[in-house]
Image (tube, rainbow, N blue to C red; front, side):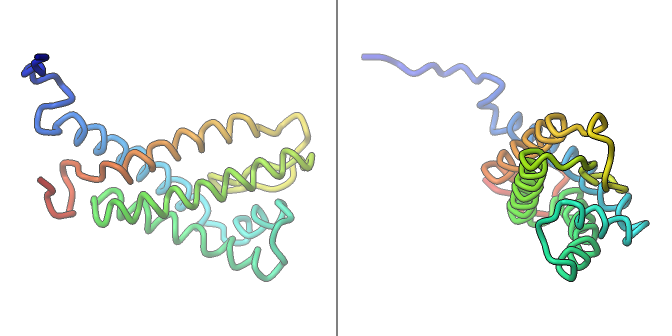
Length: 164
């Protein structure tokens, strides 16, 4: 008969390590969404132009998205920072990141020379100034943090009810 180890490793201590990782994930995502939203909301026309250059949406929808995305990013930052409805915020974060990843990948595949506009200003750039791979890798990393929070939303310093 094989006996399970009764050693309490760092991953088994009442979930403390998982909760710490979730707290760090919340902090990183909140900082990124806050930075991105703040940079874009200061210049809504530049934000709308950053959406237009992807050439995915019709003009009216591009302008609406360019003005709405910063508000959504700031709301996500606030929710994640406060630990309020963390699983919902993580799901919205993952959805937004997946959309950004698809937009960047299609721009790269179509040979568009644009700056992603992720942290304000965006638009057409010289082909040598594109950073598609870097943008994709960053967003994949953030998507992984969002996925972690979908699975393990409980963390310290959170307004969400404590989970057992």
